[in-house]
View 1 (cartoon, rainbow, N blue to C red):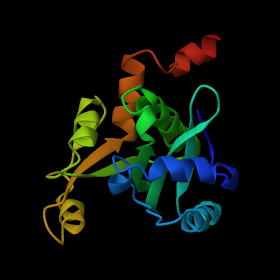
View 2 (view 1 turned 45 degrees about the vertical axis):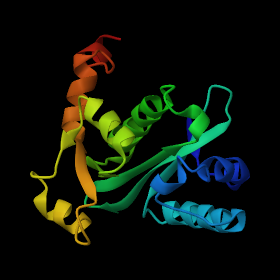
View 3 (view 1 turned 120 degrees about the horizontal axis):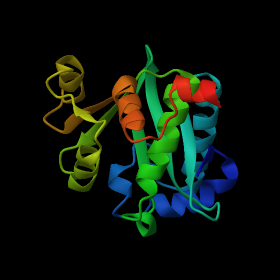
Length: 185
C-alpha cells in the first residue's frame, strides 16, 4: 500500500496531481513534469536528512495513486500532507494509506503527534478528517500553531492526531495486540 518515494513513479503521479480537483490542494505543486521530477528528488534527499517522511500510495496492483508525507518535523511532531488522484477518490484508499502511515510514524519512527492543516474551503477533506475517531480539532487547544497557520487570514483549520488517542482507537477496535496478548503468543 505504501512505498518510499521513487523517481520511477513520477510520470504517473504528475499526471494524477495535475487534475483540477486535486492540484489546488497539493502542498508541493509543480508546474511541469521536470519540476515535479526535481521536487521528488528533493523530497527523497530531505527524507535522507530526516527533514520529512514521504511515501507513495499504491493501489492493490502496485500502481502509484498518490502520496502521503509528514512535513516540518520538529520535536516529535509534523504536518500531514496527502493527496490521491481523482480516479481514486471515495474508494477507501485514503483511510488505508493513513492507517499504514500512522503505524510507521507512531510505532517505528517515534513520532508523537501528527497535525493536519486543511483549507476551510476544502470541505471534502475537512469532513473526511472529522469522521476519524482519533482526530481532534485543535483550533483552540493549539491556538499558537493555529494563529501561525492563519497569519495571512482565516484560511486553515488545524487538526491533531496524538499517538495515544490513535493507539486507544486501535486497541478499542482490536487492531493492535496488547502486550499480554503478545506474551501469550
